[in-house]
Length: 168
Image 1 (tube, rainbow, N blue to C red):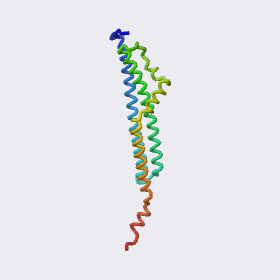
Image 2: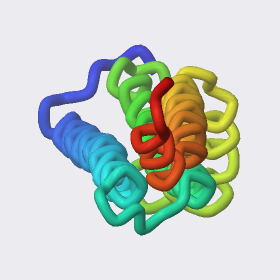
Image 3: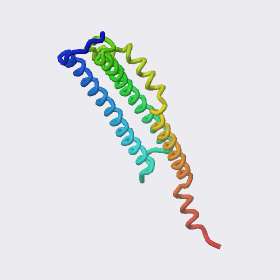
Image 4: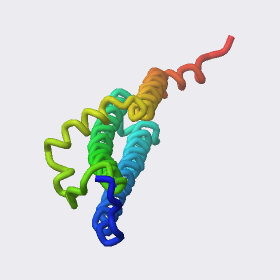
């Protein structure tokens, strides 16, 4: 229909869009908080490797760090998929507000059914820019682990032997 909706008819779709925007904002915030947690965990692992007691071997550091990165990437993708579902519903409501389709809502709960989740996860998994940050971080962790491992080859005994060896 080409008829414009009256102001009272706009109230429900506009409120639905506000709710969807709050959901999007909340899940994007969760994704950023997950990164902060990841950095904290990686820092703790680095301290365990490079601290004075060497509580963690470099190989263990790399494996645990990569597990942390993979776990946080998975959790971020889930939060982004939920935000994607909210964005999709928001786009549909905007179409309805423009009069391109009749308003069929509110349908916030229906926008988050399991059937809608799978395509959203697939969409997020296929977006390469999500991986750029995590791949760069994984490469950095492997390089740091390699340097730490190289540092393991210099034991205090060999350093002491070099410093106490007789000079010619």
